[in-house]
Length: 262
Ligand code: ADP
Ligand code: MG
Image (cartoon, rainbow, N blue to C red; front, side):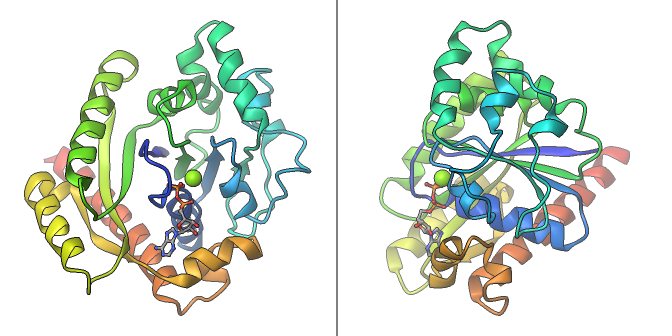
């Protein structure tokens, strides 16, 4: 059964898109079938997948507003070897138009239903706000992966975000789970980062991934070459960290299945 994971945090610049692109590529490299959905009008995940956001014919707009069948809006050639539904500034219009349409919260969920079981993993790169698009992502997802930086007030921000996710989920998707909390742009020499990291583990326990994403310039450079880090510099600490994260997600999924069976 395919799993849909929304990558969300209403804060910008915490590593959502970097995580979406690199975890999708890492998962695809393990021979899983992967779809990435770029729900952000900035279209960074699209560009980072080697697809020109200015030249694409179809985006999430056509999927959500025009209700074009998903195989017609899908792009199958990406540098990360996953399939992509592109995002660009048209999505801003989609956000507004969603207000006027029927069943506006479940447009994405309905659009994904026909392909959900074809893919092993579907990742959704959310915009940095809690708008109607993020609501659609939460309604469609099985779980939410929250990337965060270990800095001042990170814990407060995260607690507030978790509350919001819970409230939202109680309305649109009571089954929604927290997939995990991911520490991004981590600098182990920074004492504050270490302190926050310890607090995080105390508060959120097993929900915090063991895998930590280090601050690594290769992760920041790769998008300008239109590629995930593993195809830009596979020996970089950033590329390796995202491969490790994919491994951890797979191991957790296996463990959960084992738990359920008992
Ligand atoms: P978001 O999608 O949450 O806004 P991004 O993934 O776009 O965040 O990351 C914000 C900026 O930080 C980008 O310029 C990105 O290249 C850079 N970045 C993200 N993760 C890392 C990292 N681990 N190391 C170095 N730079 C990073
Ligand atoms: Mg982003």
